[in-house]
Image 1 (tube, rainbow, N blue to C red):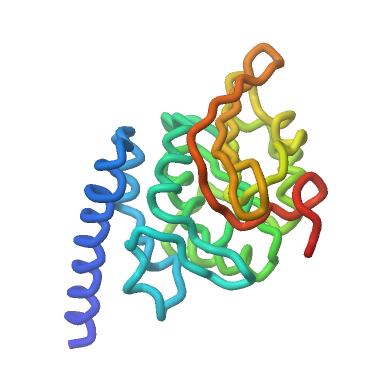
Image 2: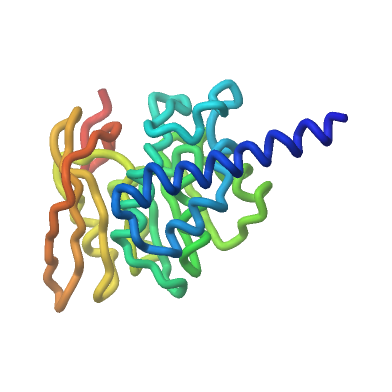
Length: 224
């Protein structure tokens, strides 16, 4: 009987994922079919606190502890789409949080790395991803604004927190043709940018307003 109940719950979550992708992503012009397919697949409800699983597929971020959040599904989708992943890349995420964005990246890239400021969140995310069967990832606790120089260069870098400016170490750790997707601006409101490294220079593109928790570190906001 418990097995049957769990099966019904999982089928319900699968239906909610399909609805999320259709109503929140496709209708907002997310067109990368690999991104859409993966977001139909990855069980977002397993990356939120159990008491909030009923909201896992709603159109807004959710708190996960330590003052951090799991991003709105649309924001996860657009930031991932802007990386333009095709499957052979090495990517870096700044701000592991619950591990959901990292799971999406692990599905779409060859190797996925992530730096999380809070050690307990890093440990929880690592255990969660391993439990779900992911093996092509690494997580470490530390200052994300410094990137992960020992694993550089990266074909894509995604920053899931708002920065007052673009951290220079992250740009330096991009490979030629690599892309950095990052929210930049004030603590309570940012603008989403994609920077592409070309010939030793960077080309910057704007993709609208957004709101993220602050990126804290040597090249971000100071600890409050």
